[in-house]
Image 1 (tube, rainbow, N blue to C red):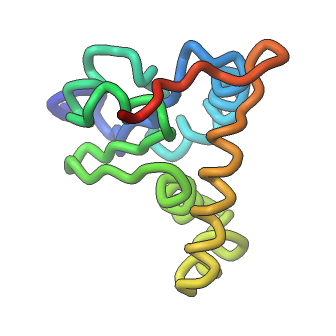
Image 2 (cartoon, rainbow, N blue to C red):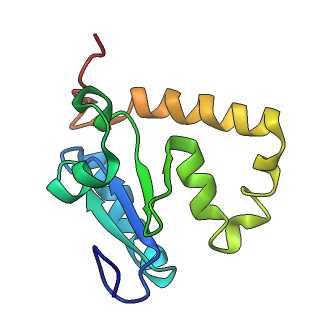
Image 3 (tube, helix red, strand yellow):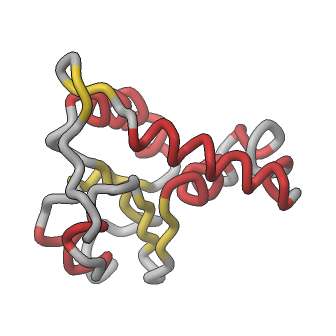
Length: 129
């Protein structure tokens, strides 16, 4: 048994549980993630906060993957990491090894994350000071 979860768990996918758009995508991905050993974990949960150890103003800026080994991946890097765990390796993970492709994926992820639609508007992300 791992320290924070079930036997065989690879890690957690941390998402903004207060964002309807994020919840919808997380729920769609749940079966795919479960087959690969990942559980969903709200970023707002005490476990996510303790695993991530990021400042509160940074917590909701991007989804994160936390491996049971303690490795943490955020944003586009988290999606690339998850893609490498499944059949998306050929389509996402391999091309992302090219620095310019990875950089473009990071820009695209940040663009979408900063503009995610919640209830007809934008999520209320904490503003960095």
